[in-house]
Image (cartoon, rainbow, N blue to C red):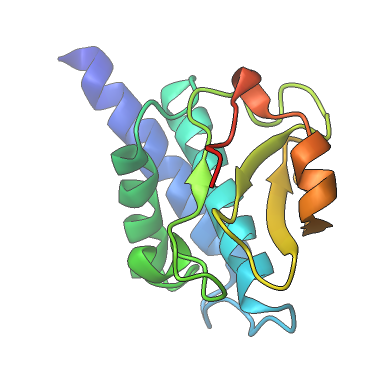
Amino acid sequence: MLRSFLSALAAISLLWAVVVAAGCSGAPKSTEDENTTDLREIAKAYSVTISAHRRPPKSLDEIKSVLADLHEANLVGKPEDVLKSSRDGQPYVIILGADLGATRSGEVLAYEKKGAGGKRYVLSMDFNVGQISDADFAKATFAMGHLPAKD
């Protein structure tokens, strides 16, 4: 019981620190495209989960919960919008259990399920977000040995 309380207190403290760091007027409007913003916000929620629980997220519900808290603080978009690509209309694929930030690598942590125009947005373990071609995606390495589903 005490451990649960302390974990919740740590999560609230971390969330409060994020809010204070962002300032009272809310998050500034970003000039990056929506998919880049989505993946950065997913990385933020993933990192907050690791900080609060001292472990990577085990479920998408944990990420959704953090996104909901961050949205309530006006720091990210609505969770249902953040978690779905506006280009392919599909939920982003998020690899759960990887320790984001523990090592800086180019392994893919999250990505567009289908992408558009022969490219997909990806989030790598080194916090980089960008587009890669379908050919490069087929050759990419993924966190936790993940293998993307074949279309």
